[in-house]
Length: 431
Image 1 (cartoon, rainbow, N blue to C red):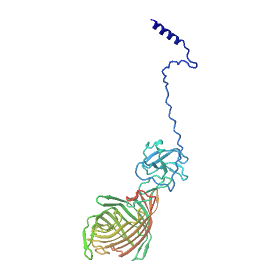
Image 2: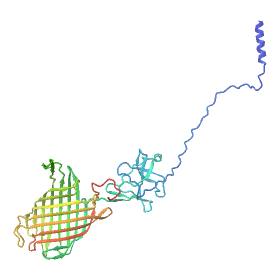
Image 3: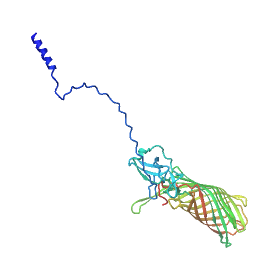
């Protein structure tokens, strides 16, 4: 009992002791209240003040083929639309960039879009991506046989004169040796030339409406409705010749045979005051190439075969076998220079007797010509033609047999003359 009272009194005394100075009782700690923090919007990207330069004559050219991207760049005084075309290398992070429109003489954008280009693919290069690439001013691509200048204008510099529609004219005087007379004439010519490759290294050619009209002294004409031929490259030699003088050597002889045909070839021959009209209904020849180029376009060949001909002046049919040596050479890569030559002999068989001419008349024709492209109008070539011809014949009754010579010079306008199939895919211009 005594112990309990003592304990209670000590506890009471301790509760009356004051806390040390400067010490304040701590308030109870309350749980922190979570505050709601709003997300801060990202800062707007800085405007792109990039100024793309237009290409100049020394700028690189975009390659032909491959993907071209539509590109929107900040407007500039030269290209206010900001429309460009980009050919990009994603590995190098580099783009060849050209304006999407042609430029005027001062280098400012016109309303005319680029011609002869593939359509660019839109929405493939947003601005954020474009800023990571190096932009190089470049000249837009051009198809094979075409050239584009620094203003974006395109022009054709490679021509295939074996695929065209042509019309021309020439001064074509003729001198007849037996009469020692110079006849003043002009020539008007037109026609359609076609050419296409075939299977097994074969090349086909066709000429339609090949027509020459001679006006002036002794007017006449020569026209062919259709002419067709093909030639081929035979990889298997016809003969293998081996020589044993010294080390044995083998020589391969190829027989590159082809076919030539004419349908409805008409001709009017004039000597002094008489004339004769002939119509070859059909002529078929076998050809043998003595030489041809790797693309079969140029050749030197022999051909021979018969023709069924009607003598329209005297009213009967004849058989006319012929043999010829001829060549057609394209002298340059871009098709500007062409040389053609030929020598053909004909013999008229099974003719009825006609007073004033032999029973089996003969003809010999010589011809050499040169054609060179001088300029182009709307990408259609205008060429200069030089032509020399000689003909010996005795098939015109009551006219002296002998030679007639003609020298011809003129111009020829060719329409639809595309680039040659061998035109380079990329070129700075005519080489």
